Length: 70
View 1 (spheres, rainbow, N blue to C red):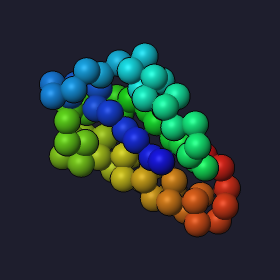
View 2: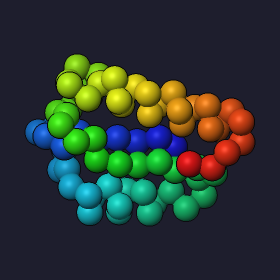
View 3: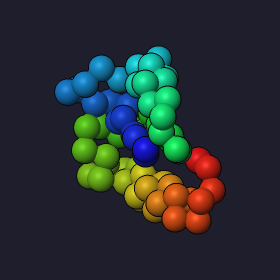
């Protein structure tokens, strides 16, 4: 599971505590990578850190494909 929450998302409650609580709910996930995307609003793809965000998605997919843990 790969999850990012925009730091300045005004549609959802965003904080590291919320992300930690969300991550804790996925006890059966083979791999879990959840983080606050700094410098971003709701639609991360359209904000300044979009390239970093998309690279993290691809890296996570590659890790899953090769069997490495995130």
